Length: 347
Figure 1 (cartoon, rainbow, N blue to C red):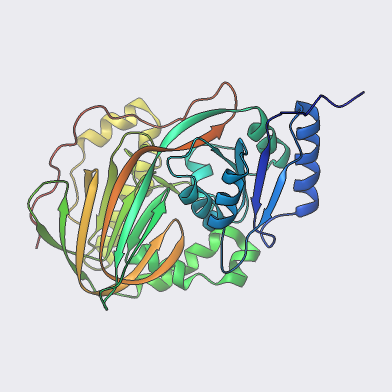
Figure 2: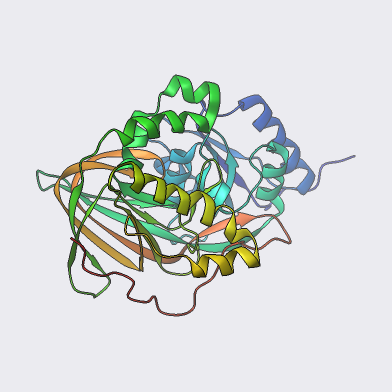
């Protein structure tokens, strides 16, 4: 059977991390899809340690491709998305590695190369929000990065630092459990002065502070149950445990209430009857600014970006076009009301 005509046809690009993917399998799947659907020959661009995907993505956009397939881990996806900010070119995901944070939050297939590639060639596009983080170092230098899922300090970043790469290769996301245990040994709190949108500046002591565009982490942990990728707001959580009991309260809230009760109507009613715990604080806003009393590790989408003394995160609403399977919509709650002033001064 003759291949469909490809003159003037659409074209895809694959920005790939050669360490993270099975190149032979991916190239075979992409080749079959481009022939079946009459697309032009795919542009293949390999990432490097010096450039994890941003420069390659800009090259693909300049070449006029219709979709950029990010084939790699969360770092590759974040770099590609950053370069596609406010572009008409769509991002398609070919999940790899142990995190796959955006793919998990969009409920995309994590284990089927052919299905992911088929979506890239036949799916439709939805727009999602992009987080922008402006970081300030202790020496006063500043830099800006995009993120898709979460940004944070405390256990979130320390978990990434403490994750054993060899253990991660062997047991996948379970390696984070070992990293969490190591991170919990740090009992020091960070004093934070923070501002949400145009509200007054407030202060609190935290063990961990996370700003989320999405709500789910590896291991099916629903950290931010109200987070939506397309609502124009961040959901923010501060963990403020006091010893072992405090951590028990936090994990009960996250694992039992968020992970179990919220899955049923009866469970959601029960949540409404439970008391809020001081050890866990939820906030909401489109802009979040924080200044720390001492430098601390900062992470974006599972990658550590070094120590910061302050940071500012803002939502770029619907700035990224993402390709999802035909017939599907983004499965996330939408929020049309203005966020309530959930924060109170804390000491």
